[in-house]
Amino acid sequence: MKLFIVIILTSACLLSCKAQSSVVQNISDELTLNYVLSNIDKVDYSFYGLYERSFFVSVYTIFDTKATPEGSFEGHDNVLSSILVSVKPDGDYYTESDLYKIEGLLDPKVLGIAETAFPEFELSVEHGGADERKVVKYKLQFKEN
Image (cartoon, rainbow, N blue to C red):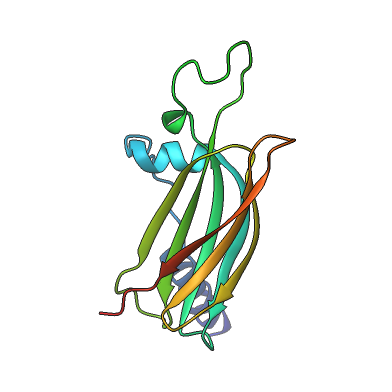
């Protein structure tokens, strides 16, 4: 009888573990996603809550050779960067999100995110060469549906 109970418990454990196993998928053919992920320089914000967590903002700086005009940096291997901003609604369900791209930035540094008037917010970014840096505030918003 004990052997029977041990076999049942072992089988149940194996079946439940099998159901939770993960699968590795090769998604290399998704070129845009592959390009973005392979060029991430830094994660500036990850799920930053705004307006009492009504929506969440994630900000990524990427090296963006596609946004760098050919011959921009003669004799240098520099490329311009882009900033990707994802705005996602609150909740456990996925409805949709907004995705913004700010491109053509030289050595950008994200300074901060500030609430303005719901559902808008500002993203402050410093960029430019060493002796000509400037701060720009980009107005973005979460589009309610």
